[in-house]
Amino acid sequence: MDLERLYREDHTFFKVIVGDFNANIIPRRTSEELHIGTHGVEWNEQGERLSEFIMTTHTIHGNSQLQKPSHLRWTWETPGGQFHNEIDHIIFNRRFCLTDVAVVPKFYMGSDHRLLRARFCFSVRGERAMKYRKRSPKTSINWDHFASPASKWEDSVIDNIDEEYSRLVEHLHDSATKAESLQVAKRRLSSKTLELIRQRGVARATGNYQLTSELAKLCREAIKEDLKERRAAVMDEAAEAGKSIRKARRSFANYKTKMTSLRRPDGTVPASIRAMEKVIYDFYSDLFEQPRLPAYSPS
Image (tube, rainbow, N blue to C red; front, side):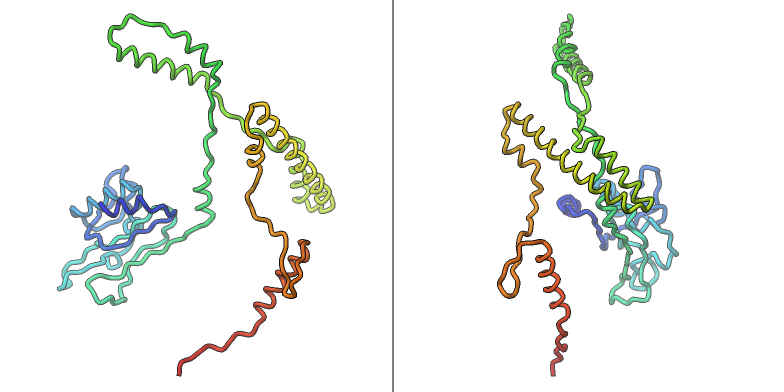
């Protein structure tokens, strides 16, 4: 199906498909059909194909998610007005972003279809939370520990070479599992610095601003020292391992362009942060304080 290929190639976070599918979808029949809601009208062969498309793309059928009266469900009627069907559908990929689906009955479109509308709530915070999910910890294999159980392999008197090979693969897999261990991330900040940060938070919560200011100064100095020691340790590890020290130094770069100077209207170039903030403030103050030009009206 071309629509399925188009859906796979599009990599946007929120996806909404609206259109005339000429399909009727009945309510959910089994617990496996979570992509379909519990509200629907009828069923036809095109509805089964549309249901398969929704299931393969892991999307959700919007029309059947909410209970509506029958006069707010049908989207198409026969020329004589005798039969009504719900063949226009809304499909989306994020379950909790849909808030409402209904037709607009009094809006004339000049056709035998009625206007179908939906309301969505797109949350930037929810998008970020789903994009940056907590990853499972990485594992590493200690090859010294792997060699010991792997060397305990014993040949068996089996004439079938396929069974012998499968047994060997299973033995190596079990040996690798025993030698596996979680990779412990090296902390950039020491426990002493983390304790200072915790104390600063407690002082801020209690409203002791003088103590908060003193602890904030200690935190900045401690963080600066910890990061300096961390950089030195990474450089030492790279040198001992024979790796590129230049690449190790690049791993600490944040790749952000820092503004170092601005040009004033008179041509002078300030270099201090305060002076640059003043230039920016004056520029935007002058920009938004200018009188608006009268709107042009053709005669």
